[in-house]
Length: 286
Image (cartoon, rainbow, N blue to C red; front, side, top):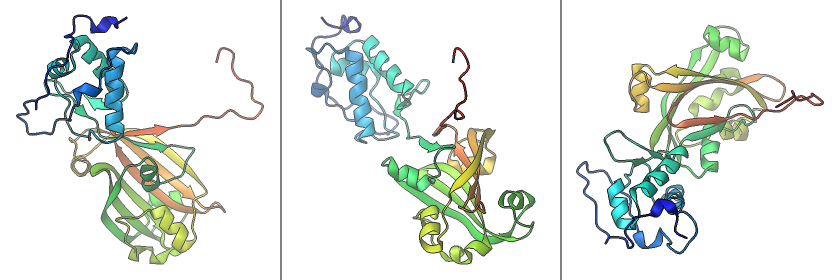
């Protein structure tokens, strides 16, 4: 039985053609013959959304590219507008596309996903682990006196020398996060001579200086971006961001790193793992 949502759809797809695109942006390629299986019991909308998800996750369809219009999808695939809208809604729920008022729907840029508490991997390791390409622009790299905030976080005296590393981190060429890192100079004085534009800070600290973060303390809050930070992250002033502050400790409890990161609010997601105390009874109804 054909799914109800496909009623009144044309029985055969229209011939392929290049859709008009006056804005000059790239429209995704659509091979209409291999998307909808009319003999399958799977609803048409789910076939379409599953196909699109595979194209996006395999990067055949790239972030920033446009989907064909609803009418073009109907004509090309021989399905109803209801089916198309169901598929687009499904993709939107998964964060794979962005609907723009009065404009064509585009493929969403990938979100940075990190562990807020349970994982101490850095941005570089997290991105590579998900098959994304991280890149870094070093904005400032110097030795500077510790401020009151930095000295408290690192448990050092105020004005003690610290290495300050200010970076703009990107995923697949798109700006993602601004992060300023502070490390006591006495722990790794030669660090300032390193090139950190294309390597992991954590991996370098472990390999060259024998310093490994064993545990950390992190906080997160919602903020709005000032003009300077918004410009670097390529968003409007006042756009939302996630402000992450983290203190990284080595095995003996000595603070190694304090960083302040501002993640674009539209491209960041953090996971939190919750665990109960051993032997603790769970509340009724939980």
